[in-house]
Image 1: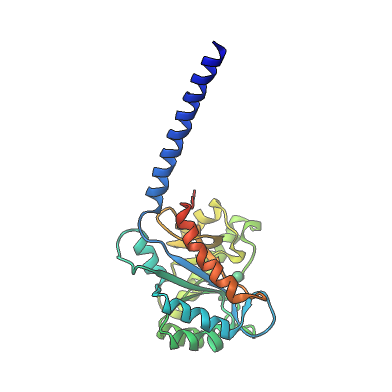
Image 2: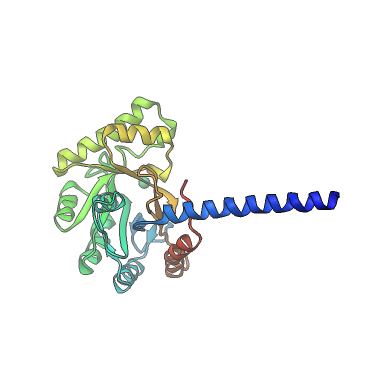
Length: 264
Ligand SMILES: [Zn+2]
């Protein structure tokens, strides 16, 4: 008798488990529909020995790999429109991003991007622009924009946003937007959170100010399940095996898709 009840209970639980699995599989399919966008995140392109600095020849090999693999580089506007179903994106869309606005982006990365005809987006700290050595000037940014590079905001002074009171978070997000718009003459609508850290409260302020989206360093692929204010990126760093790491990180793209990476 007890054996029989136990068996029935097991079947009920089993069917319930199967059903919940099936439902979540449907959800995953729904979430994964639409474009999948690889967003690479670089900082420095330089031969110095630093975690943030990808060696120049490695960077060039990575760009060549993207081109040879049939990847097409897009802008943040295209990412936004593609996710909203307003634009048909190419089959392998990639957004190349750089954080902080280091001078080597102009001296080392820009010639390689031009050579391969690639778009990229640089998130700038306007209070550092043309002020500190090691960061790009406004003229350099304008020259890059004229050649297909997009400049967006990385806040005014690169603080840890989550440690600031609301009015200072607002100032950082709004003043950087205004300063970039005044100097570059076009709307600034995308943000990269300094150090990648964010929360829903900060995201709400960014949205309120007029940003259309914000990038994190949450490791993943952007797709229909992504939050516009918590967009995933794949960081590329310098290591003893930079190229191997790059290929592995790019290969993760397949894994994300195979395992139906959950965004929420
Ligand atoms: Zn940064």
